[in-house]
Image 1 (spheres, rainbow, N blue to C red):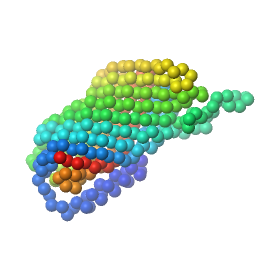
Image 2 (image 1 turned 90 degrees about the horizontal axis):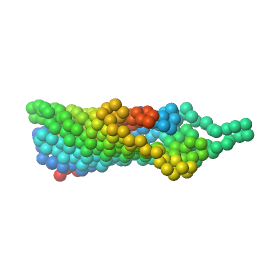
Image 3 (image 1 turned 90 degrees about the vertical axis):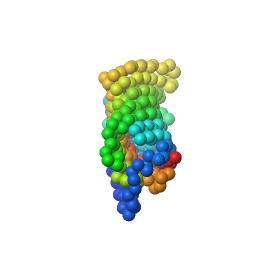
Image 4 (image 1 turned 30 degrees about the vertical axis):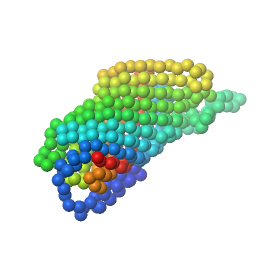
Length: 281
């Protein structure tokens, strides 16, 4: 995560901590009374991509994520559905900056098409997660909870780029079943800190390459994998502050890494910080 993101998250946490110091501590079990939770969040971050189907270069750029959440909580289990969108940033590589197809008589292929050049990618992504977590251990007054569960995810990542004068599109569709571990610290009714980490165990990846101009046909490869060909992790740190029994704010720092090893190695990672508004009912 870049410096602006870290500073933003630090100021958010510090401000709410100071604001709530005078509040009287309440029974932590009161939090369970509202079983359902609906929320929306947004923020900013950075994404980095290396895909050897395209080139050996590393591309990166800033992102503005938007997320929607629906959570269900009981005494011994919690589950949530999360949908995240990433805007369509132009990712850059300094390694290939300024390169052009040139011969003795000058440029023989255009080096820019529809706003893309040989040092840029245009990306788009969305991530859909359904997670169920079961309580393994709690302590007196439920101040510290440990959960174990699983996650079903659908990730779509699209990259537009040019080779020679032709515009190409590479689509990744990755479906995974992951194991998830969660640690939860309840300071009182108003303050909660949670860390969640997950890693895919069983995955299916589909990679489709389309040349949009020279040849409208597509080339698709599909693989099923148990860890070997598709792996990574998703790590998230949450701080929640309850404004009331019905409304809360949540600050999140997330880091996610994913690697696909066919037909050539692809790696992408993002770090982001965002704030969400949640309604409990």
